[in-house]
Amino acid sequence: MLPHLVLPGVGFRDHDDPKVSDWIRLHDESPEFDVALFGVPLSKTSISHSAASRLPDAIRATFKSLTPYSVHHRIDLSEYLKLTDLGNVAMHLTDLTACQEAVEAAAQAYWAAYDKPLVVLGGDHSTTGASVLGMVRAQPKRYGIIHFDAHHDVRNLEDGGRHNGTPFRTILESEFAKDGLLSGSNIEQIGLRDFVNSKTYTEYAVKQGVTVVTARQTHRQGLMNVVQQAFNRIRPAVDAIYVSFDVDVLDQAHAPGVPAPSPGGLTAWESLEVLEWLGKQHEVRAMDIVCVDPAVDFRDLTTRTAAHLVMSFLTGKALERRETQTSGEG
Ligand code: CA
Image (cartoon, rainbow, N blue to C red; front, side, top):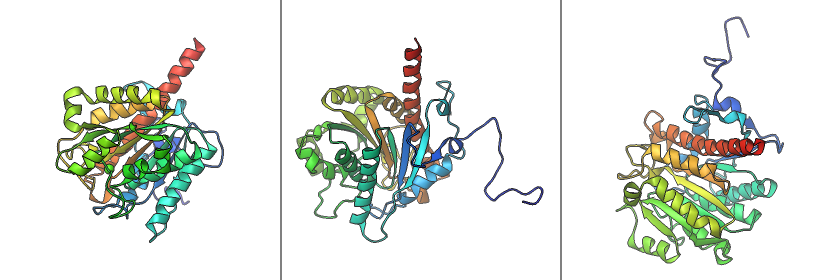
């Protein structure tokens, strides 16, 4: 480089202020990591128009401005966790079934090779069906799912196949549900809204044994109370728990950049707090975050919230590690 010139994209650097992007390492086949993430750039399977396929890279871009430090807990996550980025699942351009199969195969390959917490960056919500099935195929045991969403996502598969309205139908009608590894009674849906779900689908979810908690109930009981009760109810019946977070569970005022915004939803602060709490639970082995469309977002507010939700989950994992080390030293 000539004097006074730097590479394109290299901005101001403060050597006392490392960023999340400095912390994350691209995966190099080494098992030397504690938590992994991969992206699912898929939203052609969304009912409403969505560019959620851009979310994985949008979150990574946000990581260039976030630090791995929690002021609240006085913890630098990078001191407790090694975070590795596995990249994005390669998508077929026109064969959406092949896309679902690729996501499932990627998840299966991960869980066959590693038994470390995973963060999946969607994508639309069809991501979850594929991610969960791949996980169970690689490690067949009993799973619980805590699912944050304005919607049940149990639409019938006949009318449109595996799209963002069907992941929980896909799960509940899978071979693993029949085997008891994915039981409706071990799934809790939190944040459901009026007027965006049908009678048929609420009745289907309840009949499958799914516990349904509306957004209004969370406001009255407190989201943390609801989540802790869900975890304590499910945990004794399962070997591991998966968390699926559709960002449209947030109130539209908190998440303008989702394909299906609606009022009356959760706030950002309480969602950040419960994802951290869930991350801290050893039994919670994976989370996904889905259905943010960066193309309709306002000042990246919703992408930023999605990135903070992921960081909150990782903070939980770092806190778990810090407590384990502290008790080990004692
Ligand atoms: Ca959803």
